[in-house]
Image 1 (tube, rainbow over the protein chains, first blue to last red):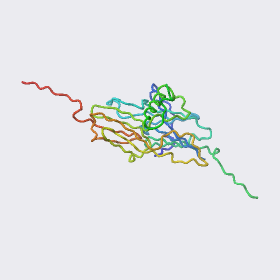
Image 2: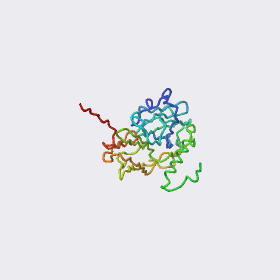
Image 3: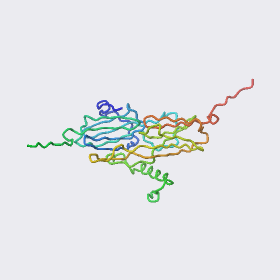
Image 4: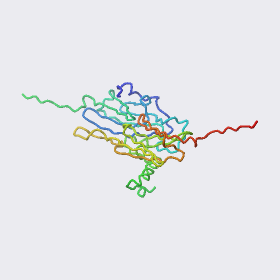
Length: 130
Length: 154
C-alpha cells in the first residue's frame, strides 16, 4: 500500500482546494522511535489521487478534498461534517530527513514515515578494550 | 454559553456533549490556524452526514481505518444502528518510543439514526470505501414522487 517517497510526497503548490470554507483538521497520532517518527492521520473519503502532501523547508502540510457521494443529486438533511477539505500543517524537527518520507493510504488512514537523519539516530559506541 | 451545565457524564447526555462540541467548532473553540497543537476529538465517532434524494436516504459515516467486516449495521423498529470497534494504536509506549499525539478515536462505537417513515428497511445496502461507510436506505416505491398521466377522453 505504501507508495515510495517521490510520487506521494510533492510540493503542494497549486493543489489547494477552495479555501472559502474552514478546513477540517484531521486527527493524528504521532509516535517517535529510534529511527524516525510515524504519523497516522484520519482522512476518511480521501483517495490516493486526491491527497497532497507537501514539504516546504521544515513544514509538512497534508491537504485533501473531502468527497462524500454525488453532491448534485443529494439534499443534505443532517451534517456533522461541513468542511469540504482537510488541511493540517506540522513543523518538523531538524533531526528528520524530509527527503525520505514514505506515505501510505489505506481505508482513509494516512501513514507517514519520516526517518531521522543518519547523524541524529541514537548510536551505540563500542568501547575498545585495550 | 454555560459549559458546566452542558458538560455531563453518562451516555444519556452524549448528545449534549456533541452539541457542545459543535458549538465549540462553530464559534472558534478550535480554529484551523492552531494546527500545530493537538486537536480535541470533535463530536462522536464516526461523524455522520445524511442526505436524501428522490429514491433513497444516504448515510455517510466517516469511519477510517476499520475492517469493514467488523462493522455491524442493523435496522430495528425504524432505527438504524451502526456499531463496531476501532483498534487502538498498535504501539505500546516503550523505552524507545514517545507518543506525541494521540487524537484518533479508538475503542467501541455505536451510532443510531432514526429512519423516516418512507424508508424501506428491507433493502438497506452498505459499502465501505476509503474509510467512509455509505449506507443507502431506499424509499418505499409508493412514496417516491411520480408523475400521473392525465388521459383525455376522446
